[in-house]
Length: 342
Length: 290
Image 1 (cartoon, helix red, strand yellow):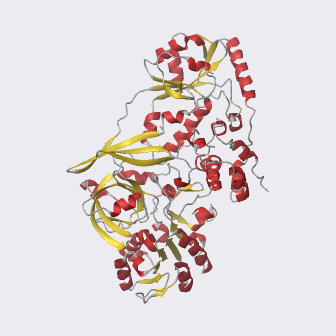
Image 2: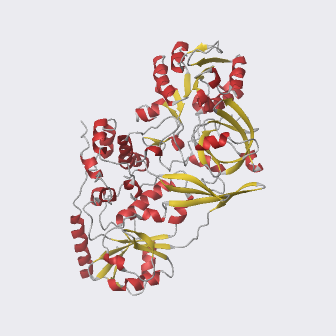
Image 3: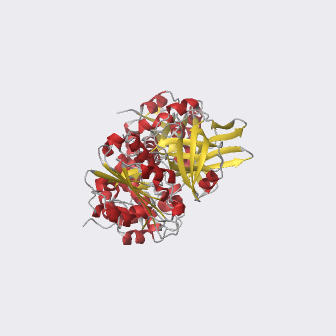
């Protein structure tokens, strides 16, 4: 049992300044109407009052919406390829939510499997995740149905709990312990602090009321795989806009494209989505031209195929695909209305 | 051997980065049909030229810099190491750009990817090749491979068809195999044509007429998806079990390594777990999506 610490919430700026001597600090930041994890400006600590998760999941910090893979140019001797330079530095994500930290663990598996993805893995290296538990989950959140919770410690190095005036701080990993040990301005948590934090956690846990039943979900999906009526019904209102996949913390589909500007070429990769018909379109054929097939692919990839390959469901219950869908498509309804196995 | 161990496929990565292409030079271009060309190429790097290895049935991502990448199988045989080959039907952005290239042009190449044909299963068997159109490209790699190791295989039967006589690819191969007394080859075209004195009929129909024996045999099928779909039931009818039918599938692909997501059939990625599958592997899955 590791010891816990306490700090006054208003000292968060000092704490981050301390940490920024060693790390590049990323915090939940506003950009227009949306929020995402971005480099801390060294001043603003308004994010601690924004008690809800960011619009954009933190996958974007390791697997950006658009990323330069390499550049190429031609001279008399032919083509030359040059790798995109990456500035290596230690980084710390502060106030990442447990669901998004869990999502990174899922992406780690996908990007490490078989062939290692050098772009994702080099971004992910030397990254510390400091979690901030959710005291105010959205109605669309359903993490507790996926073995997680608003204060899940599984994939963070350090966890912060907002217990009113103070942060209750738990060290989770060795790296987290090391950082806490050399951090100034923290005091040992007492039994009272611990009890207070537990109360906050419990109240928050009970605030996650949306539930899905994930028992035998892979078997159920397999059984209704060819049930076109069901898939037609649950995909009826989808407009194939792809926002649920772009903002899903575990979706990692991508496209690769070239750009040529005045003989200077660049190869990029960018987010792609199984919601788009063109995603699978070939000149003579398209295996998923109908919307219901694409919705089926999305649901099955998360709850059947990914678990078959890696033993873990590729959904963390963050609820973004529900609250950010323009037509109120709801994955929990899709799962709950799945025909029972006869 | 089937390259099921992915670490075996990583030997030829440029700088250890799976997405970086090697530079290759087009040495020769053959017009197969009005819309299909075969490209002979070699790596610019001499060391790689000597060391590069692959298995019949594996593919690669080829790029035209500034236009993009597309996947094609390596259509030459690993037993013939003078150069590598791939065949391209002109259908989209990258293939159009490829068709405009001349000898001496440089392209990008990353690979080989995919599992290749399971030689360990095929050796000692009667091989029945069923091909349609440009679908002969991966088969010819294996056919030449088997011919160059003739004593390791029993009978070789080839049933190959195209829409018209003009659409028959690799005519120089068809002639060579026709002359080879150890091979039975049947060539067919879909519809009657004045310039064609041979057999007429769709490939699945011809397979039914020829009715190759399933005894100690494996059928290797590649062609347009519709041909593959109609050929499996016919092969089943003449006695082939699902484990005795092999195909190599085509999907839209970008990464080639099972990450970008689009080429899956169920939990399998055609690029990483295939492109070679037995019918037994895919028949229960997404029957309409292969």
